[in-house]
Image 1 (cartoon, rainbow, N blue to C red):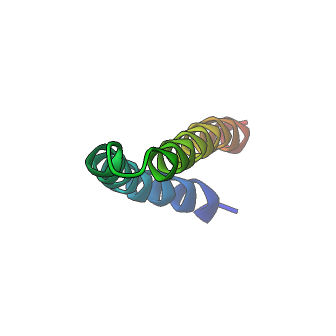
Image 2 (cartoon, rainbow, N blue to C red; image 1 turned 30 degrees about the horizontal axis):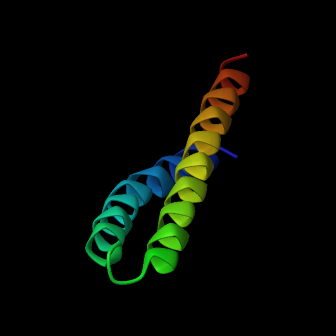
Amino acid sequence: MKSLPLILTLFRMAMGPAIAGLVLWAASVVYRDPLLAGFIYALCLILFVLAALTDWLDGRSRANMMQ
């Protein structure tokens, strides 16, 4: 179970550039296709919340490992 915090950390590290790329892509298509841009922004929000939940889960699992 010691690899779970590592996997969660690597996932969060991958989400940073992915979210940034999606935001830049949405900003470039916002005037041509607002619906697509809205979908991309919603996807960014979902990925950000997922990354935040993995941060919480990572901290909780590390706290449990220390006990």
